[in-house]
Image (tube, rainbow, N blue to C red; front, side, top):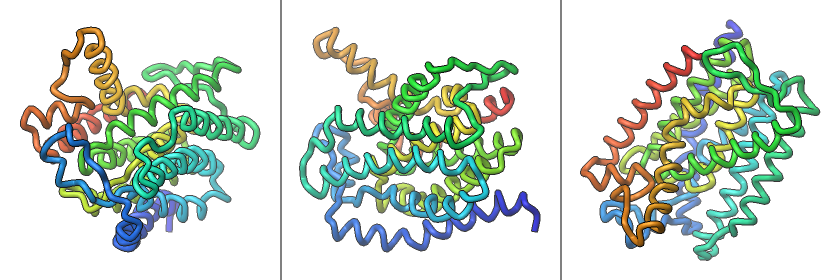
Length: 321
């Protein structure tokens, strides 16, 4: 069996099967914990029926990522740093979800606690990259042969990118299947990029995440039986940042992760404009996917359109490799 199959087909299939097989048991345990979603009363009327749907479902795709990822880690140097950032951010999301839905504290982790936790995890990632691998935090510039290396400033820049990406994935998780579908495409793109750059480890971990997300979507497509919660959305932010950095491609996140950025910017614009105009709004509702829902789009249409846009942008980014 060729090494290409071992690094591509098998990780996708195995992680997919683990997610599909363990999904029902995980959902059942979340129900026992009474880890149900709570929808805002001022939110969309069509989303009120989601109240009580188990959240923290990101465990479904994180489990195969951990199991299969650790299997490949001893022989693929790029796997461990991606897992550090993914599971570090995912653990913070899990704590936030647990406090909110199990302990019934609506505030969850305080902002300073999240920030501090993300800082510590990001520093651990940067330390591992710089001290335990021959990788670096330098960045490829799309459509050129230029590499940007800011020396010490690579670390704060990395932290800023990690926080921004995690916020983007968090806001994108608001419609059944949206965040997972968009991220599955992005994971596929980074898998292709890894092949182009000859990075076996990045290829493996991208394929593992792709398969795991596809398995999770079996339970999350509309109408979703489970939601990923901050456990999943923050972990996805960590994964996208981590895989981009081991390939020295964080700038590419601005292209392939445009939907994440679009979601964050829509919230920032909405909040700022609301404050400046004493209550007026730019969008019907933010994040932006709710704007389209308010305009009559179904959740399925939102997912299809946003995922299609991501596919097109990934094709554009591939040209820029």
